[in-house]
Image 1 (cartoon, rainbow, N blue to C red):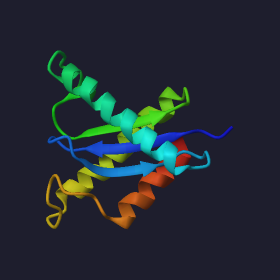
Image 2: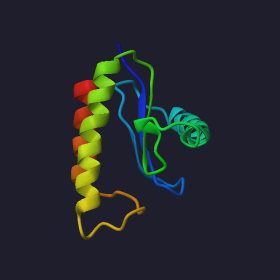
Image 3: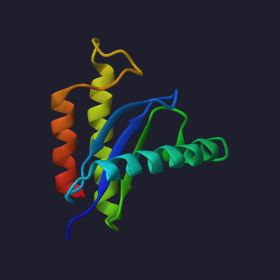
Image 4: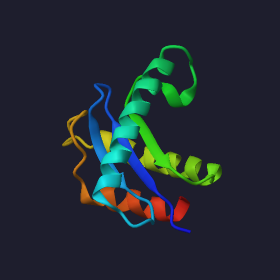
Length: 119
């Protein structure tokens, strides 16, 4: 069964710094815009929750968000953990300006490989 998934990293200033359609379903441009709209609407809710809880996944730093239609909680958790490690490596790169778009082809390839593996 084909799955739909859209992954986005949002900076502290609510600016998307990385976006990828990572599902195995056939991608349509209209669906990509719809996914982007849903994720940005969800970002408002996440931002409101960030002020009311001390939960680990809702800190007021850069946010990793995934829109998906599967129920693979363990796979999603593993995906987030490994992408977070990749993201930390990007942040540690002295040539990367925090808050700027992530344009690394290596990062993109790794994220997509992790999505195929876990999602």
